[in-house]
Image (cartoon, rainbow, N blue to C red):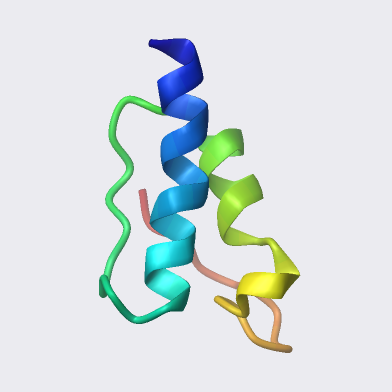
Length: 56
């Protein structure tokens, strides 16, 4: 189960970067795992600006 939780965040972030989903909903996953996936620069989810708000 733990391995599956770590693999879902990168998948969700990739889908968001490809505009296949409009929102990522945090479920039963550690915030640091989700943030690490979302903040990957190669996915361009935050662009060149600073991330100032993140709702959980």
